[in-house]
Length: 203
Image (cartoon, rainbow, N blue to C red):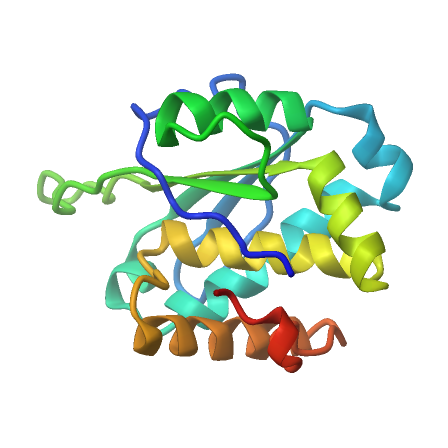
């Protein structure tokens, strides 16, 4: 059984300092800039068109989860997805969570100040944060569960995007709501509900 990791809060820009890499348009009335940063070649070897997969998955997660948020309608946003190695994620996990081990995904939300701009000027972009995913752990989980690696990656991206949007799973109610939303988003890509089996539910 695997459990998507918690969100943590490092200083802004700690993880994806070399952004940007790629971007796409997103929600109605505003745009989501998605920087996909591939730091381990194993991702490109293991997942076809991995940059495109990340961008389209993050875009859909944002549109579904934040589509009714007035701030998302009037203010551009930016998020980074970093595809890296177990070693790099272990270092982040040790530094920011105190756990000296690799994990599948870490989310680093950026604290948001109230949106404000001088009269007649556009609002500044909303910096959502960084989602960091480890290849080795993700690939091992997919293999152990008999899942397609691309499908499992999509799930971790969705999970991470929801975290940087403020969703969490600290209580049973919050976890259930987050799982339902993840399943709804993944269904857009033909990916089955990862929580359908009791064995797949987080502990």
